[in-house]
Length: 250
Length: 283
Image (cartoon, rainbow over all chains, first blue to last red; front, side):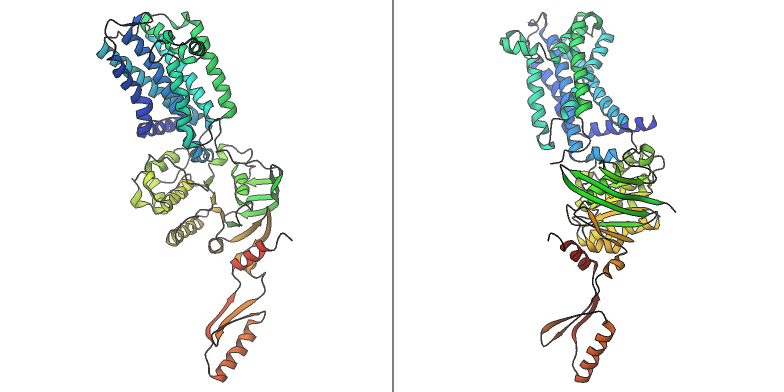
């Protein structure tokens, strides 16, 4: 267990030293929230919520996919391709400790960011404190675990460190957009709405709105939970199947 | 005393191509064993099977009493690995990298002692991303030694070094001998193998074509060569009886009153043995 704590500390230090991660996955959602939030007037409504409140749920969704999916996947691909993961395999650090430390670091970063978003919302845009806080925490953990599993899974399909950011950006930015992270999907073409209907981020953002703004409990939204969970399980299975410690040879 | 490493009839194919075709050798505890060969001869495949990274097709392998294919974390406490490519956390300093990896081991060596051993005292608190290639390679060695292993794998540890950096690395590896470590070294530098190794195996096309002490290997080429210059022409005599030939030459030169310019007497070097061994192929 001491080894796990040691590794977790190491991962947290690595996370805090990485300017790229700090900016693209941590700061960017906060910046977007402030910028977009100041565009809407206080009377504007989106999907029945105050515009700034809706935007807060969307930005938590955007923060989730940026941190747990994109940031995690890029870090793992780079570490695999430059040989750090291979080196780790030669040490007595148990693989589950390593994976758990990396995932937990990602979840902590996401939790801190979500807290910052909520605080910014309350300070700048008059958002209220989350109405069902325990359910919100459960929702964040569910979302974090699901997108982290998908992030680990995607590493198996990326071959080189150089292309990793490009490929992952090309996936997560459109997904965030289609899932309604920046604005409501109501005015999207029907095709995009159909796509949005299967994406896990759509359900996560919806669930955050339910528990944070309406005060619904997480167990009262079984459909949202089920869709997120199915994606999470699929991600975990793909991750177990395709995750590699060493670069592919050829 | 039991062997640190024991390899018997090791075979490995990739997509039908035989990379290893029945390799056998033993490494005694405390021995520095050099695995020498051109690129593609099977050095890295052999080492990575011994490190547990690759699976073998056939043959038996025992490393520190265990089969690397099934050995657990306790076994990893006892080995150190320098891979062909240097890889660390670039955003951590030299000392932070060592400290992070030290935490994985039960009996790590003190960080500052390691830094001194690999000669990175001045770079202790420098971020790894600003180290030179040679300094990174030394940190590699430091990380391989951080758990105070019994057996160290060094896969081409000085490739890309300038002569000064290579000399320093040799000193460091030499000091490991004094610590009683067993070392498996792969290299394609003959002088390195000759200088560091107690025994050398020459690998060619997945087979060991020579195995022994560097001086034993050089004795497989019979001739001693005598070089000198006469009337501006280089003369090379190959002989099995260097004492006699040399005596005749010098007697004759003395009698005639002229100097044997550029006189040199030398045994075949490991390089010549190696070239001879790796050349006689593909008939």
